[in-house]
Image 1 (cartoon, rainbow, N blue to C red):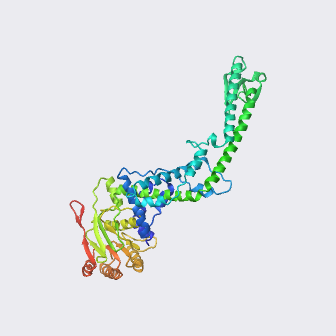
Image 2 (cartoon, rainbow, N blue to C red):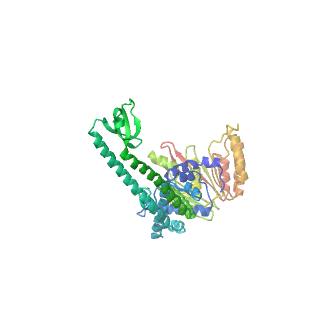
Image 3 (cartoon, rainbow, N blue to C red):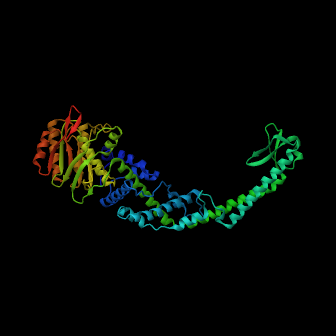
Length: 484
């Protein structure tokens, strides 16, 4: 589908995406939502069905077991590097995403009638429980490497515990013995770089066998590690270094084992990202009462009780009333010309139709009556509001003429045109004549259009065209509300 950035902005599509984005779990999914654009009908319809099915899970007790997650994209890109080692947290993320796939593969088939489309996506994934088993063999539930991960690691950790015990017992024995003498300062002991040391009065340091590790600021205290502790301390340090090496060896081995599942893990990640996006769309649909209307392959659009989603949210926040729109476009009624006073809601009608069309073609549910019908356009082209271009030093009218020239070049039978204040901006006679020519051109091209105008000659032309109709919006000056 073709729509340029300026038209997307006129229809406030970026603002709509910004409302959906925060519902995603992942920052990458949030960014993807902000980049959403209209797609081909088959792709969009699939996305709409998935979103509608996910939405239904909020309205019943069928809560989909999908929780917050951390993505594994960066790990998947490097895990095939020879002798590479993933960080501890990466293994847990890989396990968590794999567990998510397992839960979803068990959940969706229990309700095939409720989730027929969502089942298809998850059912084609090859669930590899070995991934979970391999991670569980190495890590405990706190994300720490188990002693049982290898016989060597188990032996080293046993020796580490014995060394720590010997250090504690010997230090306490020495502390007690010297505590009976006058060799120790009142503080008795201290800690230097995580090593327990005796606080020996410097005058007696030669009377206490051990390793000097420091002095107090005044020099009156010498901090010493007792001889009976030193050999156990060095044994502890040696075993701790060996422990690090053994853990590194275990994790490199585990990385290589999981790398064999990289193709499946890429598919898991892609699926999770897509489900996250679907969930975000569904959460937004829940907020705006979005539904999946009937999608036609033939050219019939029937909007019933349609709302502008951003206006709906704004008025909901401010506790204001919002009025719905109902209109029909078909091959036999391709152009609607809306007239009426300023502030009557004509521009909102254009923006509502345009934004809802962008939403449905981007796979986003729309706030309409469920009995509504929509079809897909190849192009949506707009000219809404004041398009004066200061940058190009063009007048409002010149700017609009330039844009209208672009629309004329591009418009065809699969185009939706949304043009506000059709033909205005200069001399009424010239503007009216040009607008009449434009209208006849679009009509001959069999384009679909919703236009607003104050020109009487345009309304008269519309009356003469069999596949076009006039509509009017009245403005109640007392209540300041629109009457259709």
